[in-house]
Image 1 (cartoon, rainbow, N blue to C red):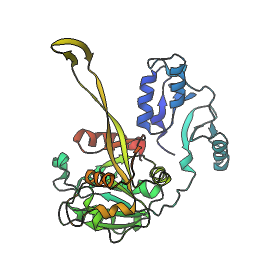
Image 2: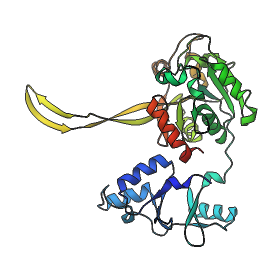
Image 3: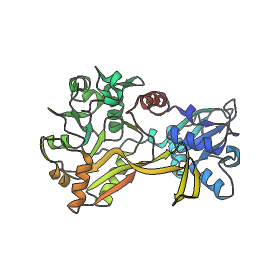
Image 4: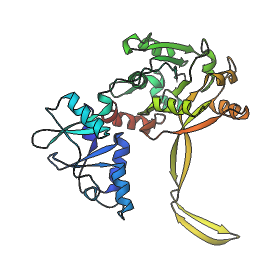
Length: 349
């Protein structure tokens, strides 16, 4: 059973805090509980939205928006019984209680369902220098830095295998021998792992030119420093369903100006905004690429993803975005590496 403790929220917590917890927990529900862990209700994103539509505010209490009569499972219920309840009520998760109504777990629908086998290749770009974490990467490639009890790249590989993707290529360069020694042929991870060996820096798309043959299906390409709970099968299905040539995974990134911003016209103050927030759509470092687009990639030279996207658009190919709304973290800066280790136990253990 997952680390359900991260989903516990007090009834007197503000909805603003609950939204942050929902995002960090990576689940679709929070368990509203008393100090002794007695279940009082559940809270989903939908519950919060409905409360706000009825006139509530982000400062309103969790108890004002929670579902007071959620479906629950008992510790003595069989797997078949729990799964039947979840299917009949269209639940993605269900709290598990003991005979006193105390929370002892949270079962997810994914706990019961075997992953759908996916024949799509996965290419993980792991050849970077890790310059932003230089003090840590002098003798260890960034993908092999420990996050929780294992290297970051191992969690990424296990995540793909857990979702049914077992044909994996890893592009290696800087200290790549450490990666190859750790993963080998992938057998101990229930995967078939092969390597794209860069003799020189080849960018974020160039290593795709080293693939031994053209794949029969769209491929997933991801960076080796992205920690995520993304459902990659859903991303593939969206790509195929829209007859897309390239799907670019994106996220919304907010940046707040730490000062009051003055709007002026010819020296006259028009308005003043106190610490405004600007939103940007950023690349999430994960893409789906159809086989035909691989022909655009030059062989044996440096080539980045933005160049591939631009060439594909110029060639009249359909390039679309896909919103990555699940947990996502680019482990590039020291503070992000610290956060990855802090988040690991709750999300990936």
